[in-house]
Length: 310
Image (cartoon, rainbow, N blue to C red; front, side, top):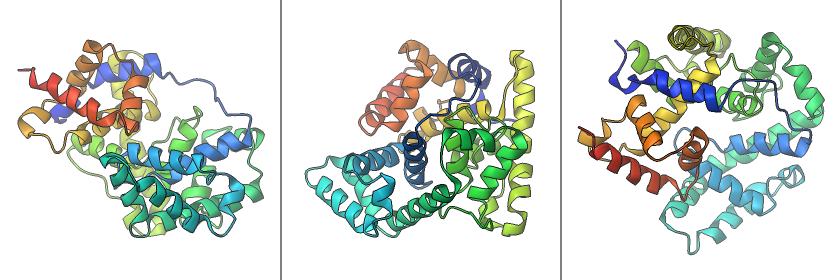
């Protein structure tokens, strides 16, 4: 039996269909925009919230360190750490946490190597709107592109840029609607839906990586899209389901340090009720989740709303 967290999922999905409908691809015409979006996803990590990755990406972009020329300078990691340490002076608690996370350990080194690898890949491929359109004309060709970038054994694999980052990059252009990231949010959604948590393909032999991804993530998501679409009497894609899952479980994660008595009241239905009570659309909610200045007020406001529920 599905977890209580998924109660009202049809309501959240109806909002996704109304506000984020699948449609024709909207690929930017400028290669710089394609690169910026690709680079933004390089900062995504399962160990930090999206608000942190968005903030650090924006900080480095404003310092001129996301341009492809700066990536290949050979001093990107040192320059980025220097810019972040300067920003750390006088930073508030949230910004300080974000900066410290990214400059500790090898996180920033991995991102720098990933961007350098991506720069080389797109330099050879010729990043452009026509190129991306030609590589994503069919589901099969899209799968090939995703595997080319994300599959560890691919000769063209972009270092430290896996399925989640690649699929989300394509989703931002209304592409790859038949795919979903193997993100923490999707894992938790499938766990609550089926009662079992899918194995992480990254922990398995790379030879079966791609088949595992489809079997353990895409197949149950397709099944969920079909059954939930029948309930709504509207077609749903895998991308629609994963977007609803991302919103729900990203929000749930913001409440993890709050008292369980109240935080356990968060379900798809109560989240929809909160959005209705605050006259929020889905885009505004997504902005609150991803903005370092908005996540704490959002979590507090939502917690107050849930506290008033029986």
